[in-house]
Length: 298
Image 1 (cartoon, rainbow, N blue to C red):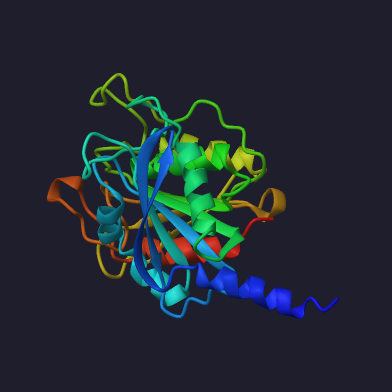
Image 2: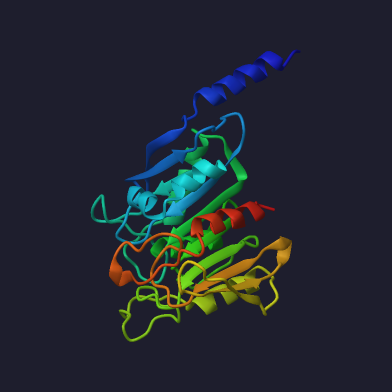
C-alpha cells in the first residue's frame, strides 16, 4: 500500500486548519465559564514545522492584550520566531483579571486546568513544539508561572517570572523545571524580602531568595550560586546575577536582582511612576528567550 497520498492529505488537512501569521483571539470554556486568550503568530511561521510557544501571563488588574502592550514580547516573537500566547485570567470585568496563583484566594478556580485547555486548543490551530512550551509572567502572572512549574511540569519546559515570587505552599513538580527570575530590590508591590507590615494579612508569598533557593533544591542544583554584577552603562542601577546549577538534567535557576529597581519589567519603561525604577541595561525579553532556548523539555 502506498501511504504517500494519505500522508500528503493528512499534512494538507493539518496545515489548512492552522492560523496564519498575525494576531488572533481564541475562546473556550473552562469550569463552565467562558475564557479567552490571544495568539501572536510571527511572520514566516510555517505550519508544517513545530514552533516554540511562550505563554505570557499578565499581572493582577490587567488582561491579555494589555500584557502584550506592557511587555512588548511580540517584537521578540517576530525576531526569534516563537508563538506568543496571552491568556486572560478571571475577574469582575473584561479589563481587570487575575490568576489563582496561591497566596491569596481571589476565587475558587482551576487556572492550571485552564492553561492546560489553552495548550490543547492551541495545538488544534498551530503546530506546537511540545518540547518548547514555556511560561513567563509579571507579578501575579509570575506567581502563576511558579504554580504551572509545580503542577503542569509535564507540559511547561521552563519558566520566567518578573516581579512575582512563589506563593503556593505545596510544590511537587514531576521533573526539574529551569527557572529565571527578575526582581527589583525596591519593589513596593511584591516585596523582595517577602510580606511585611505593609502587606495585607491575607496575602502570602515567599521572599525572592527563599523562592529561588526552593527551586534550586527542587532542580537538584548546588546550594551555593555563582554571583556576578553586570555592567550598568545606560543607567545607575546595578544588577546582581546569581546562577544556581547545573542541576538535574542540566536545570538552572537564575536570579537577576535589580538593585533599587521597582515593580517593573527590565528593558521597558515603568507603566506608572510610583511603581519604581526600571533598568535599561538588560532586556527581560532578550534574556527570557535566551534562557528558554537553553532549556527545552528533557
